[in-house]
Length: 235
Picture (spheres, rainbow, N blue to C red):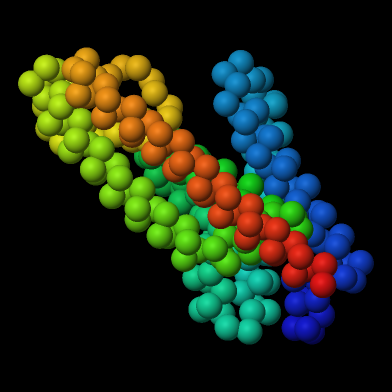
């Protein structure tokens, strides 16, 4: 019995597994759509009742799916604390936590329902390639994140010394300068905080050049890993 359930709930080439996967995907999309519709303020009570019914049905199905996956898992603790195990739990947890919770907290809990859309990763081959690419390049990505954090701090320190006296209201400390460093290195450039001294402007030029590289580097890392992942699947 356990093997039969496992062959259905886990992705396989048999028809029952494919039908189950399509059903869950469709239910996830319906759930996300109804979540968006619920935010419309002028909804009729009858419509809200229908949306609530859809939510109840979705939660029941997702809950059954979650416990079935725990039941068929070779290592139950490993599944529960895995990426997909946590996502599956977060997909249903807000519904159960909302009982007896203050309405102000309820708004935050409802936002967690968006985690359901991450469940689609399990059933989409393209997304599967992407997650495999991330896993294979995780060391390079972690190194990139570490270097980026160092550059952000270095940028904040540099602009602080250039602009502190000229703009004490914007660059009163290194912590205040971190906002400028982040939006400059990411090349967003909101324009709410910018240098006015010559030294600050020259420093900003070099930081912007570095920022262009920061945007491009992870793209190269992930695209290279993604290509390798696809090639492995085709072999």
